Length: 107
Image 1 (cartoon, rainbow, N blue to C red):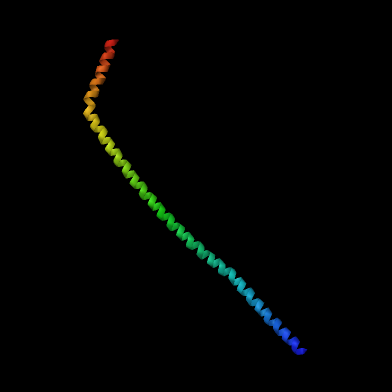
Image 2: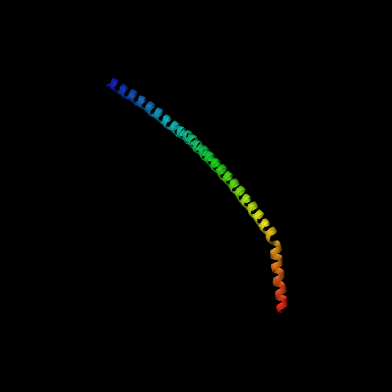
């Protein structure tokens, strides 16, 4: 009987130690999960920042290209307008003069 009680006490002691060990491991798991969470957050945050930087760079390059095209079109249009003006300037002046002279003559 005494042996049985000693065995029970010994088993109880071992189980308490095992429970304490498991509780210790459980508390370490919380710290482990927090560390893993931070690693994952950093990993995905870094990925998101790289993707955002790449997309921003692409959009900036696209914007610059579009501005260059618009400026080129503008310059071409201005050259065409200047040529048309130089070509038609005398004709327009004569038309305006004739219109004014006719208007004055009618009054």
